[in-house]
Length: 280
Image 1 (cartoon, rainbow, N blue to C red):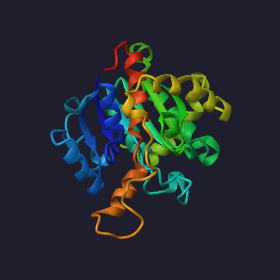
Image 2 (cartoon, one colour):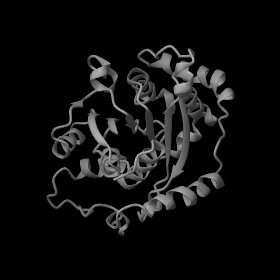
Image 3 (tube, helix red, strand yellow):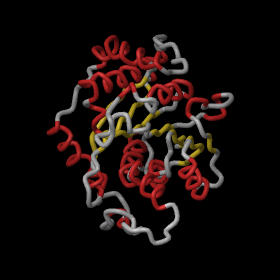
Image 4 (tube, rainbow, N blue to C red):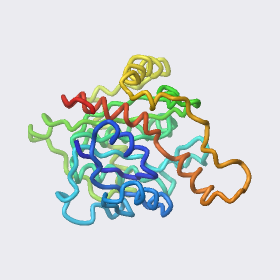
């Protein structure tokens, strides 16, 4: 399977999906330091800077089986001001516009678990409703980095949405989303009210999330290479004082925002198995 990466960062999602056996076709990342890392690690992969102007030409040139995305988490992160959709960095609308334009078979996204609680759940409900409106059947799970051997919890919610082919072929296609700014946010909210009731959306409880991790994450953990299960340091060995390490602040910032590759690999393997493919 091929994939494209939105908000690629330093390529945590990309590395994990490649380890699972998928092939990266393009990346979208606006941060200059992160883009240089991507260029060094994926020198032959096409890159684009701004998600708001992507895709830059005919959509068919950018078609992939899977789109992965880690939209900026600052608007809902516990460490930020939690302005949600009022934050100028809120780019879920643009993310869903790209998905509606390129129509991948699978869309997978990652964000902090505060996404589930923002605006009393209405924000997340809007995202799920918008996915349903453009023809995708979404599910979501909370996974911890500790489930794949990391020494810290790092809980994140992962959304995996599969194209609803029956709905698309049945003549009930939704009108493709236009470029989504504030209008996209309104559409997401209205879609939640009109669509989610018929999609049998069930909100996960804390016990559900822990049960999912034990039942699924630990199961897939057994399939990961031994090297992926080794103990990790809690942070890169760049020290806490200035000692000449170049780009130290950028390194820590990008690592802090990155998807843990081993979790992305776990999800990639699950997607391949669901599609009837054998992960490498």
